[in-house]
Image: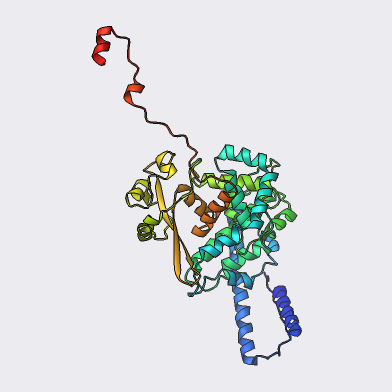
Length: 415
């Protein structure tokens, strides 16, 4: 199966065109060097085609999907060099910058769009909040940060993205694990699209008619450079596991249906342990910064109880939820570090205490920066980062036990 010939030809033509448009002098490479590069490209493309063919054969056999259908649908699959660059890890000189990250996402354009999206979907957001326990502000914040409510959903074909990252991942220390992840996502995409086209999984009848146009449209839909799809940017496996038909039309459409996107985000958060009515994080007083610094290890695990953090001075009892809210002393938490350089280039870190709901947001996107931005975006939309769980007052024993009727003599003894 030759996936590559037309692609290589178009790349060559594009290169010649760009060279012709360049105002800089054209320096012709040495013939020997050109031949070596061409040979490497051809070998790389051959490996890509072979590996993709093997995966399609496995899926066809395991899921009883006609191999000819898969081969036809992937006959124009291609690697995308720019994606290989986008997934490269940052350079050793790169400094994480929480301040710049926050500024990129919590800004007037997104907030204005967020309020508009909320107003347009207010009734449904309220309904989903009641059903799932996930605050409307949080759902709106996630969709806003992910795609500005559908404005930025990516412009790569998803099958090309996942094929590139599955079989042509750049040489990095985690190359093998990342390739395996994207191979799995490519399989998930095929199963997702086959089901959307009307096929059974695994198909009991290989002659069952499916809609080939719908199958190909699903494989060719746009995604991010990592293969995430739609308003909430779900990976194929997340679509299959957590996406919900919110508008009740019998079809999950995360690209065009705000209700499907809203319900799917809420379902994802709920399934990943969102605790209704509980805060996301606590700020740390200045007096507790040094103690927090000693415990910050970057591991997304709830290691410490709130009671421990109070004892260490990282949290103070006067904080509302610890004194009169629903956060119990045994509730688990973690220390979140948010590094940034100050105006002089010196390393600084902001610390907060992340609770269970913070870690739930991390499951959506494995980044402390992301989770804290979602929390603060939600706050900017009006979310109260505090417990709404009613507090049950501790009653004294004298109030809890009603005295029985007694004689005057017994009453005197009680007094």
